[in-house]
View 1 (cartoon, rainbow, N blue to C red):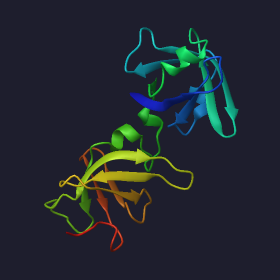
View 2: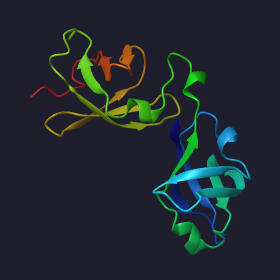
View 3: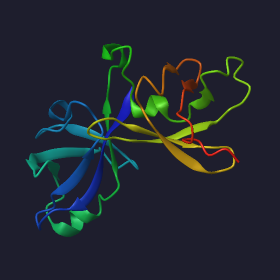
Length: 172
């Protein structure tokens, strides 16, 4: 399955290197000189990494054919995609694309009759990830993606069950 493994940020320096928001647990397997990545929006033939290095905990990548600051700037906000084998994923591990759009229900709602919202994004963090959930009224809230608060993820069923502490979800 083709999944997003990174997002290009701003240019670093004058030789076209760019910062990358890493969206994979194994950057060393995805980002190395010679690696070819598909992009979204699509570019002819994708991108081939020419240089890869870490600078102050930020991944910097250079790409073949993008050798100056202006060329690097043209890549800003481009998503980097790679083929990922989902069969190699543990039971309690999920890729962001698998979570996007899942319907959110309270753990006590076993009939799935009162939808709380839908996952609209995932913010990756050092200690834990946060799920961005948009409610039917358009308001958003965040919930830490930890087993105690998100005890059930049902990818096949298209839903997750959450057990939020009081006050996390504003009751109107």
